[in-house]
Image (tube, rainbow, N blue to C red; front, side, top):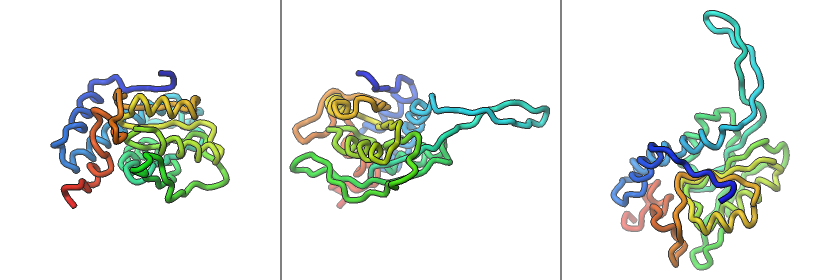
Length: 212
């Protein structure tokens, strides 16, 4: 699949297996999301623009490099919040904006309930964060919002994606790169990724139905 970058790394495979396991508790689940998010962020930022900068080491002067241009991190609430901190550690000067969406269980379509994107001064690169790309509806809507803002380079970071969801997403946004830890083959009749990892938001924030 064009513009899809799947992690091929032993650490990704190891941490993803723990994440998928149904007995992994919420506290450990959050740790696994954090670790995988950092691996995704390293991959997704490997071609960011740099400019030279003078550096004085304890021994001499040299020419180093620093990032140039503005970046924005845009998590889709609520599950996308779990990916923010590790990405922000790598990009501490990035702007952080939020989009709130939930899936209508009857239609499987995204419903936007909150948006905190500005109308001016778009970032040069925008990273949409959502741990699951299932049908792709929420991510499609979020990317469209960043494009309306005027962001010229939008990238998506998801822990797991369904092949069907990626295809639907790229039918609407063929230019956007998607970075994932794994691409699963199918969606079940309820539009959950299989084999997947269940509901990422519920597992992350310990709000599983049997805990209610």
